[in-house]
Length: 385
Image (cartoon, rainbow, N blue to C red; front, top):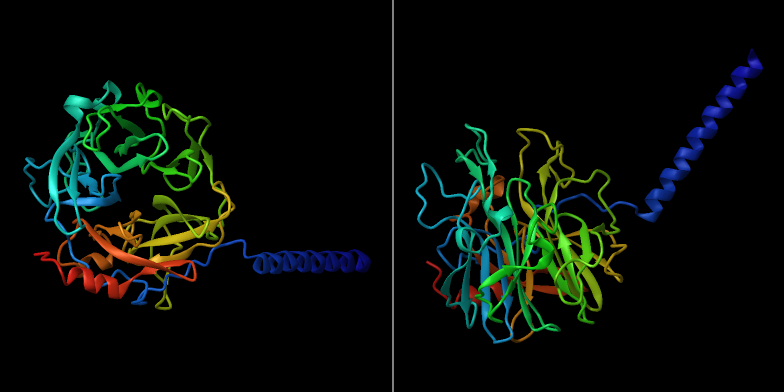
């Protein structure tokens, strides 16, 4: 009996030692990204000088510099003529995609609606999805009878193909799609590429594109997915696959994925909500439970030498600036888009929410952060009332 007990104790000690060694090895190898959110760090937070550029209700602001020297702006919009019982929104439906143009990021002209459900959509895009009566949005807005909104548009000029692509997604879990301009102009008209004439090309939201230095084009999908496109951009050339990443120990809900390149490395931008902890700090490890207090909508960045990964540890880059894209201006300086998310504690401090804006950013030691001085200089020269 004593011998069996000793053997059992030795076995437990051995297992404990092995688990401890494995944990130490994990810690040493940094298998997870640091989930701490540096809330209150003014050097990483969207500067208070940043104001809406347009008095247009918009989420998921997107801006790019076209080959003609003009800047183009789009985003998730509400139907202009719709009457709302409460606050404006597009959780259930809207009428299509709109575009604005500027010579200098300061003065914007509307180019109108460039894609319409009624006039341009395929049958599967028009169909919509019924909403159960009494359903409300995440913000408590009463929803109408059908999900049929187009969200998170991105406008891309593919240099190697001299072609304009307009990419967006549908609400109600109806997937994403890619459109191509038939006129060779950013305002379209647009038609579905072959890969999504009959169905969504990607079965989730937040689809975008990235053109690499060699002219190869990739579609980047919600959270963590990538697929190379065919050379003629008519469809994907491979199934979507997951990036190899350095995750958090418990992955939260992540959205607003964006891919770019800097100092020869791929930069994977994602958006994560910060939440408070019991010790007065903040983390990106959410409980994902009803009533959870959200704080700020933050951009985190990870870097890789290979487009598919592995991507290194994520780091917080732009606090309160989530679901953004990066672009370079005519001088080669970097910018990020902003839309002032009304959800979370941070939304209460914004004078206006769901409005398009841009913030200058910079790379310090190859890490992304807001450029506070450049932001103050830029907004001091324009009237944003």
